[in-house]
Image 1 (cartoon, rainbow, N blue to C red):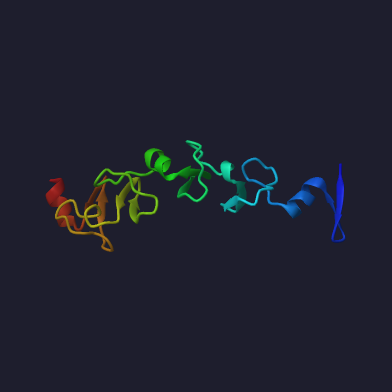
Image 2 (tube, rainbow, N blue to C red; image 1 turned 135 degrees about the vertical axis):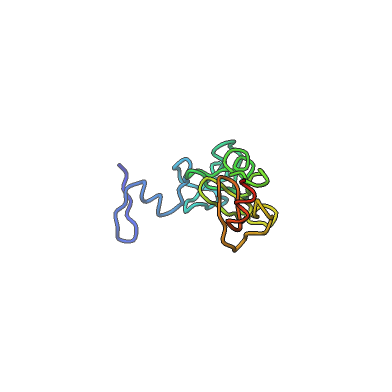
Length: 145
């Protein structure tokens, strides 16, 4: 083992290196380049911070953490995004949404509305039956009859 003395303390080679340069979260090597990225509480070589699904480089790009792994937005939308129970489109990761059990809706008047009378339910009390939303027992009764 190689040891280093720095500021009155003894360091092994690895910990001395850590005190001088950041370490990449992807390859666990020291980063000697001046260009690197910081994400998710770690430092990364630019080429090592990449989408877990398609390997595209994520430095400076929008990404989503899915199961503790970074995923680019296109892969997220294709493979992980929940579908709106009303319009059936994927819900963007940064979009406002309403979730109830296994059902999800865009938090927009055209999606999160009563299945009976089409009243917007954002900020209102509602009843859910499967993927159907109702503003009242009366609307539920009329629609489900």
